[in-house]
Length: 359
Image (cartoon, rainbow, N blue to C red):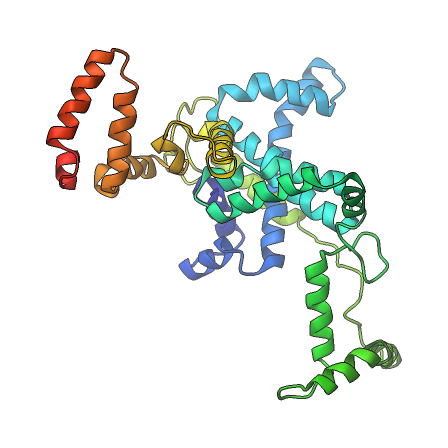
């Protein structure tokens, strides 16, 4: 979603220059590299957004605080579409993703629920029907759990196999790693049930022998503590990109990407539009309420001006989509007589005919 606004430029600065390299980064094909890119973006953007507030506090001899910063940003940053959109993406979504990972690693149910709430709009702004369904069913299932079941669920949202309480993992990931661990001791070929049984029964002994051998020969075990990420140079490099582009320049009235491409004027209202789409999807698809058919609810939030034009171009719409829009517009006519006249003309001259007639 944010590839065009600023992530493509970030990846270029980090060395992803060819089309293949950019596609690799965009599709998050390496989770570790993707996590680093997220941290680089989030930290650099956060520092850039906080800097004006800190300078304001120094000039006015005020003690900075998170609460005061949010109040300051809501009055100052809202005037600039670039700042407002950037604020939403950093403080709502990238922070939410980081919180989600932190919650799983530390088995923190409250933080996990908060992270889910913060990031839920991401599934509705664009076209992600499967994730929309998963998000809503997951939320409703959690709310409908009996109290004791919910408490048990909150106690074990993740588990740790190393004993380190900051390295929690989801159950399916633990099973995947355990399965991978077992396969190391199986010879090539299709294992029989007997082989699986033998390996599973003595796996803890084999792993103990493995770790003892590693220690004896001075070989680093795969169960070492996680390495510290040194991203300071990369963070400063991206901050320099933002500064050089004068990305938050107050004189820029239009909303532009970091590479200068014009973004859709309504993109700044991303959260509001996504929230409406989520509410509409919940009522129509989950609760089965009979609501007015709103054609624009099925369209993704446009990122660029060109995408907006493409979405609104009748050449790119099916006959059914055009028909829904016609009926929606006629239904919103105020005068009943005018509405009936249009409906009559529509039934006689347009309905059931070729797409060209609808246009």
